[in-house]
Length: 113
Image (cartoon, rainbow, N blue to C red):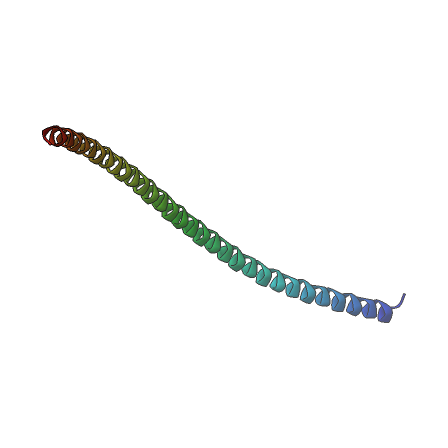
């Protein structure tokens, strides 16, 4: 091989090395950009997860409060029902006593007539 051919091959190889380095540099830049995008997306996903967890916790708390309110309301309604039933029984007993008194008075009145 002549010097001219070696110089041509050397120039070709240098050009190829330079092109490969430029391509490697471009790939490195794209990789860095992709890594930044991935970090941003990861942060966004983490924030969304935290927000979702927070909202889920708030919903659970709200539901628990509602369940507690419903339980208290049911207990109060049962107590009211018991009081009302007792009052109906008491009124019924008073009514029976009045009926008995009226019946006795009627018997007394009939016996006087």
